[in-house]
Length: 143
Image (tube, rainbow, N blue to C red; front, side, top):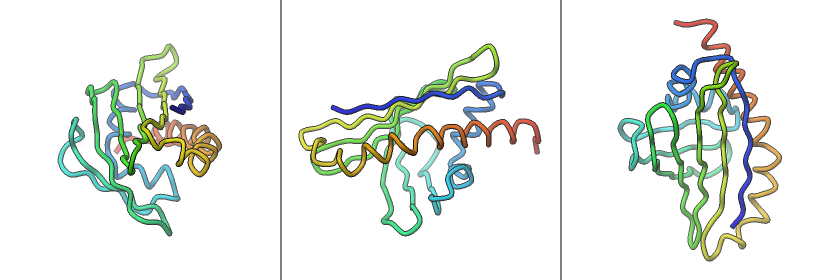
């Protein structure tokens, strides 16, 4: 199994940060490499969604372990493995600490790692900082 974790702190309440992140319409705003995101139904365990990266095939995913306002896991399954993005939102003295833990598990996970792990480790810190910045901007300009 492989895993990589990164955290940021943003100057917004946990409830605001959670609401911003769980509104999947914000995902392309934060990540310009994402063309579109859709979610079938509310942001609850078992809901399925898709992400369409620019210039790439649509990625299908499913939500698991959603605890409103606190945690959620986004799971992408591929033959013989699963890529999981575990998100945690925690109150922090200066706002909200947001942690993303990416992990690759399964019998064939090692086959995918050379193509995926280095990119995630390279891009995740900047992506998390962009998310924190976007949440802070939205919190300071409501409506």
